[in-house]
Each structure stands twice: as C-alpha cells, then as structure tokens.
Length: 247
Ligand SMILES: [Zn+2]
Image (cartoon, rainbow, N blue to C red; front, side, top):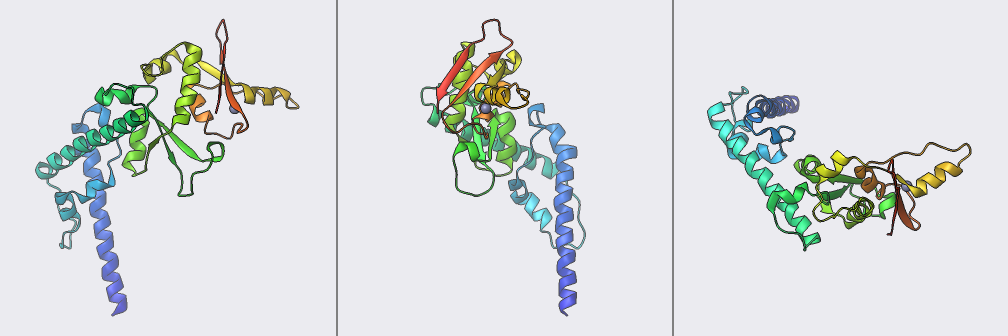
C-alpha cells in the first residue's frame, strides 16, 4: 500500500511540475512577446504561480496536464506582470527617495540616475563589513529586476553612493542629476590607487586593472583595503586628477 501511495504522490508531483513548466513555456512563447521590449529581460516572479487562474490550472484534480487557454491566461498574466513591474519600480524609487530626500520625485525616472545603486547580501549571514562582505551590487532597474523577481531584499547602500560621488567629483558631474547612461556613454576609466601601489611594488610588478564607473562602485564592496580610504585616478585624461574620500 505504501509503495502505491508513494507512486501516486510521485505522479501527482510530476504532473504539477509539468503544468508549471507549461506555464513557463506559455510565458516565453505568448506573454513575453506581447509585452513592451523593456520587459523582455524580465524573469517572471514566482508570485505568477499564485494568480487565481494559474493556481487553479496547476492544482487541477484532472489526471492530464490540461490546456492553457490563451484567451483567459494572456490578460491575467500580462496584467499581473505590468502591475508588478510598476509596483516594484515604485518601491525602489521610494527606497532611493528615503535615502536621498533632497531628490525630486520624478517617478520611475529616478531609477535612471547613476545614484540608483542597490545592494543585497548573498546568503543569510549577518552583515559584516563591506570589504569582506559578499555583496551584490545592482545598478538601476536594469540590474535590480533580476534580484527583485527572485525575491531578494534590495537596499540602498550609501557606501556605493560615496564611491559614485568620488568619481563624479573627478569628472565634475553632479551626482543628483547625472544619469547612469551618461556615464556609460562617457566610459571613463579609473584605477584604484591602493591597488595600483600594491601592483607596482609587487615583485615582479603586476598589471594594474582599469575600472569602469560601475567597477569603481563595486570596488568599495570588494576585498580592497579596509584600512583607510579609497583613492581613484582617472586614466586616459590629459589632466589626470585624483579623487579621495575617507570611508
Ligand atoms: Zn583597490
């Protein structure tokens, strides 16, 4: 009897998984192309499986997988995704505004600013100091949605903002209005002076890595020096200037 019960439970589990897979396939084949291109990279959140119609389909008592009706499922799923994206973007905008209260609330456009830097911790261990912490850094909605859809808890970390202020100071740009796309197009290259000095004094001397603006922000969370300060040098610039900040 026990073996039979186990077999039935196994078959039921396989059927539910097949239906979840069919929903994923439907999303990729039908829902995704119906959404605006800015949604195409989006990984649908797990909440999708809890939508009433979807949950009913997946948990149906029938012994066969059953059909997915495009007429019923397309509006339900695409409506949910559109609402979810706008709700999550708003939540991230609110996070930024609470950390940078002097910013204008220009809605989703706040996420296009270079200061839209979010972090989350890998694993559940208590937060440790940045330089030894395995921190994920997300720039704008473009990165953040991967974490948000997977249910990760994003935060605004002012340490990342500190790094941004140093490099924008070198470039003479205002952190409160500079767009991430502006920096990416300018593509300035930097070097971390601490790592530069270490590389040059090594025997034999090591190559110095150049950093993009995003690399510079991430460098603050890396294993670079915890001891004093981060100094950045802009490279490939006629009047190379040094920016420093204590953190
Ligand atoms: Zn460094």
